Image 1: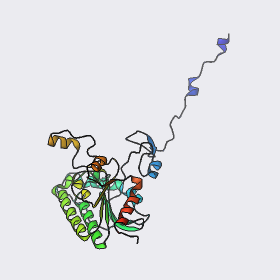
Image 2: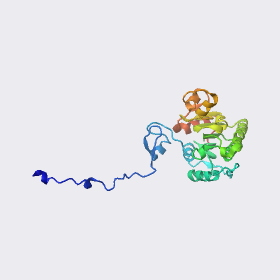
Image 3: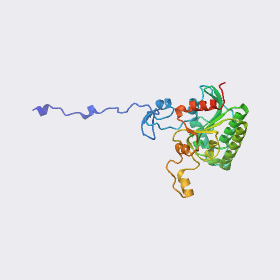
Image 4: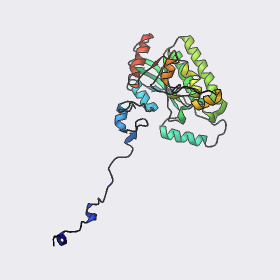
Length: 283
């Protein structure tokens, strides 16, 4: 019979011995907004902006400097100070070492001089990957030093803020940085130097309450979250419901807290135009 001639299918013959997909690890990232899987090299080439939905990924310090400063022009200030543990907080030093190893930075801000389309300026860039960009004694000292350098060199200063606020592991010393940096900016203003503040996501706490909002010109990236405390904390404090999106850059612009929202791909040219319009020239 024909049935006898039909061979029983061998299931083993159709089972793949190796069904692993050869995808290199660490080469892809998921957009937290649209959930699209993005090749990291594509994301980097687009300056950390999702090519599908336009969501802004947070930038590390190195990448930020690369897209703002002319190639090879950034010269880091040699500020030889170390973070201390004034409150003797448990594991604070260990956490610092972990962040240093992870980010290849000694603290949450990089400061130096650079050129933007040939115009020399002092540049400070905060990095949220290092202790959430929190401002401790060293961060405050580095920014203060940079402001004083700008005065001495007769240069403008640009500060990119990205912070969760003061570093509470350093207690009152971290809060003192607000007054110190503010006083330095008062001297900068009296000297007639331009200060451009750029707010990125997120800019919160003591940074917002001090130097981030003291710029002669205040810019922000699209949809950056900006405020002193989180929405829930504020609502609990004042006992009122706050409008949706009240801490976004768009809300801040509408209510006069910032001067302009600038797309990341246009930031360098915008900064150059502002420097040039304020009388600074190429060197």
